Length: 405
Image (tube, rainbow, N blue to C red; front, side, top):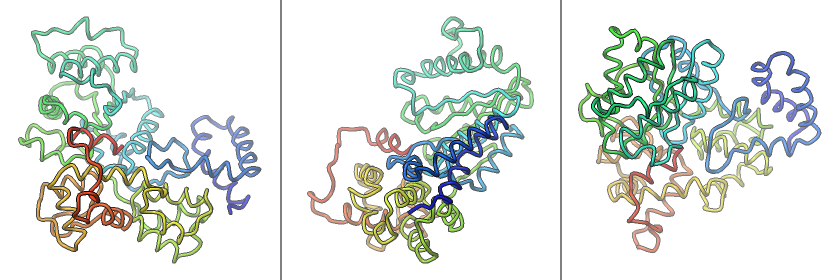
């Protein structure tokens, strides 16, 4: 059970950033929120429970764990290089990190534009022209520009030149940081190489174009891009400043445990929880907040964590998408049976999806014990009935990336 003192601490931590954003005048409101939380700690904890299907943790969330990558990201945004790369497997917290980067930029005098490609409809992405016109409309709206891309678009110049002309003439007269989240989405479309080669050209030409000196491009992605972009000199993913997100350490898990009222009662419980969830950010945040709200012990957590009707049921069922690709499923089965991954491409795809960890094929392993238990129960049997309900007519790549926010 969460004590009143612990609830008060959680409420304070959760709203401290809001006070910093709004100013000292917001302090009285924050005190009222703390008093309210102490009066009804269960509802406070309920508000902190991380959804099974993940999602962005809002600013000020007491569940958000700051890592070394957050500091590196803020430092890169302050220095404003041409390209900043935010890389990490699915559900490691890239979008939540970007949101905090956006907040950091908003505190400065630099303008910003945020584009979430995952939220764009296919009608905005069908062709390169559709994409660039959609991006220009975002710039126009976010920067209050008095221009309409559709009115100035010249088909004789092609999409790349049209976007560049728009940016140079209208958007980049003063510094702008352009956040692009989930750029993996573009790999669904056959024009992706042209888009990324344009970005690389901006990096190469920055010293001779003053307009490009005003642009910083932040790209968030999970894909092993070198598998899809054959020419390294046409890729923006091997230049600029790279910020890689890592799993949580034991100390970070212990700190979050304290913040949530110590659902893990002692060091032994923390060790057992870490063995099950690893440092997987979503599993750690969802697991600890679920335990705090449901008043579950670590033993009860261990008994239900890998079940379809457990705290991670929706999240774990998405692993079944892997079964739509025979090479990936074969690699998973080899690892579950104590073997190694001999397919380099399969290892890279599985690592991008956050299913496995390891720097190369020789030391790859399933990411955490919860995944191991779930995958063993659903993937290891060879009979067809145990193999999962597959939907072979659905595009593998489209489904492989989309659910893993």
